[in-house]
Amino acid sequence: MMVVDTVSATSTSFIAHHLFDHRGHPRRTMLRVVNCRPLATGFSGRRLVVRQPPPAAQRLADWPVRALAVGVTKEASSPRREYRGIPGDGGVSDDFGDDDLGAPNPTTPSWPPRNRADDPSLHNPLLRLERMGCGWLGVIFEWEGVIVEDDTQLEKQAWLTLAEEEGKSPPPAFVLKRVEGMKTEHAIAEVLCWSRDPSELRRLAARKEEIHRALCGGGASCQMRDGSREFMSTLANYKIPLAVASTRPRKVIEESIEAVGARGFFDAVVAAEDVYRGKPDPELFLYAAQLLRFIPERCIVFGNSNSAVEAAHDARMKCVAVASKHPVYELGAADLVVKQLDELSIVDLKNLAAVDDSAEFGAEPEPEMEEEEDDAPPSTAVGIADDLFL
Image 1 (cartoon, rainbow, N blue to C red):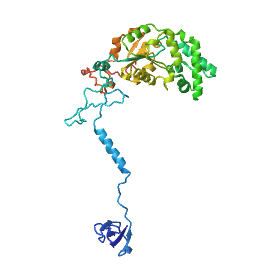
Image 2: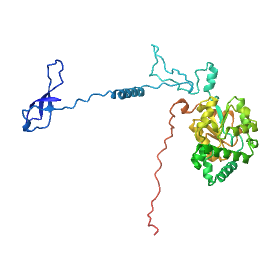
Image 3: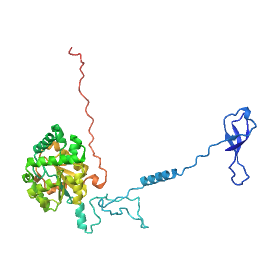
Image 4: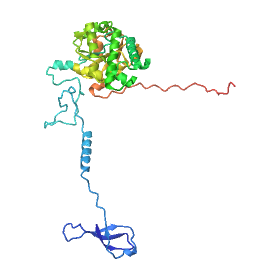
């Protein structure tokens, strides 16, 4: 608030003093020149009270926002510290060089780039070197269609029988192809849309598995595919850990493994009860790699469908497709396609797991260089009018 001392009728400013502005001396009054619009002559010579808005002060609420912005700017400008340990082990290692004072130098990056397969906690240099080599790998198998024979007609008949019992319309062939590899509960809820109630989904899934087991005659009817036992024996001789990942219930998988006598080959078994979603979600294979204590980049998945290939690649794993129920040309997205497991050797797996993936080292892929082609010769095509032959 100001008190006007002098007002001019022909001027657009007046001289005023602030009532609460007594800086330096309590009796000293600061005079200010305030701009205003032209005043009428009737206000000439009068004392007026003018309200001036206070200057915009910096709010206390702006300080945290400004401090956060400064922190983000510093974080973006400073180089990141690379971590050379195994994810989840809780260890922290220093990858940067030290200067003369013993403090880490943040401007010097580490070289060579980090290798996620390395484990600094290993005190044996031979084991640590073996871990970083291409021979350190784990194998994850699907069960049906890869290790044992898979009859797709029995799976289709089980769905049709369940639909008839529940009074639902029979699902068409393209819908049954879509639900391959999915958990039964999610297939019923998300694809077939028969129910959303959790208890009802569990009931329908259990009933569908009962129908399937009745049609195939239980786990005793499982037969090993040609070359499967020999291939797993070779992997076991080289001490490569194996795991089974399936969307079948654990009871069904355990009975099938016991029936074919393959219990001694597998170090871990992942069933439908262990994960929330099935393929093409990578959760199934990621949990199997966790049980094997391997990083995903060093696991090789053996599947027999495109959903398995998609799930493996989403988990940053290599995938070998087994053409048991799909032709070879439909499985071209896989890293390798075979008809039987015994077509592969340990050398093939080591080449597949070779450390050449940019995702493992955190480096950007090199651009592909193409040879520049010469200019194409001029075209000799001759244009013909449309009405030439009319």
